[in-house]
Image (cartoon, rainbow, N blue to C red):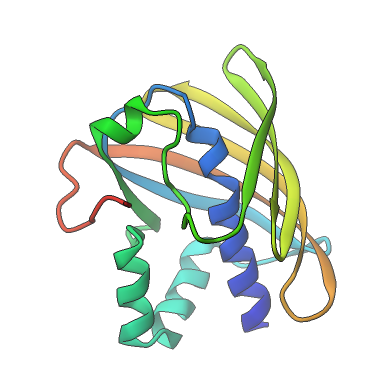
Length: 173
């Protein structure tokens, strides 16, 4: 079960960068929360519960490695700091650049973008909806293989701008 939760949490990170790319978003601290997570049509607990379990199971070294990548587990989800330069670029780094993941926007219609992604152990497609420069949502469906078994997963993510000051959350390089 822990491998399934960790894989789905990793899929969360996969689903987010395409949504933000090339869209003018406010720089500063963003909180990403996830809901409606399913694996093989079975509901999983809310992200806050999963993150709580991960926080307890993570070693200080693992937590430091995440924070070095610009990801902090806080509040109701994951917090990420976006700099003005990152917001102005076409490549906002919400996932680890060394993840091996590739994303492609397949269609842009109004405030919605359709995208697909491919990672070493996950692939799928989704839709990002930009509500403003301070909020966007994504819906993602895909498959992943964390334990040697191919599984289907889906989730919804909401990203909300918390303010200009990132506090202790470091921007991703």
